[in-house]
Image (cartoon, rainbow, N blue to C red):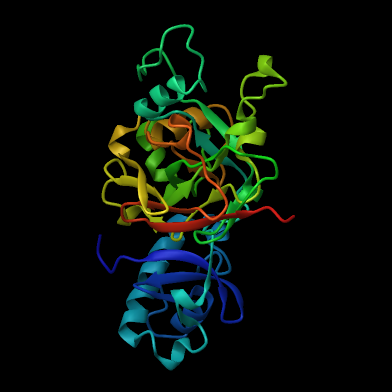
Length: 333
């Protein structure tokens, strides 16, 4: 891939909410940079379909990405401190970091997509023990996907309130990907062409109600267990697919209060992100801005009966995609 690699993010500061190109520790407002770029002799790569949000930029990503590459070359030529970008440049640590993709139409999540996680949930009593154990045999099974509300997204450094009267709040470090191109019955070998980029994610889970003691016949309560407020931190960046060398060979790591709890690798996926896209698009049409979180490795709290409490700090990291730090706080709503 020619040109400088860059990341993308959403921030609050320097005059409001804005989408940014991220170079090192600096965020450059896309709207500001695009205006300067279009007024320059270099500004011939074509128009961006949007400058206000990364979500809106997913529509037409195949046209937007080359323009962003040209803009990065222009920024480097001029220098980030150029008067051309005045008022649109800030250090990331001076800004509020928001989820890169906001208000997605769908968040699709893969359940038990690492064998070690399958096994630990069986041992913990969260999966039925009757019948044959699932051993990752893809000839006799398909991905297991569930929805999570887009309204529960939060930023990479936001606090997460422990819901009232809930005691078993768990972590699930994951890699997430974002759809840019409408997909209906897309095959796995073509699915990567529908993915704009990847993010670090955490599928925070409320085990208290994930299996409902009052309705045992209904098995899992995915809504109560997964869609509490701020239970989907993502970010801090969206890394374009072109800059992710091999999304099937990235470490996934999670620490609680500095202690390593999860340490896996995307090479351990049972179903690849592409296979999840293939399966999901056979059921529902995927649209630009839809998000997939692709499954967590072993080491969740449920496996050892260890759960998050007020004051605990989670650090979630995926290789090359950035680290999130989220503190658990009291629910004062």
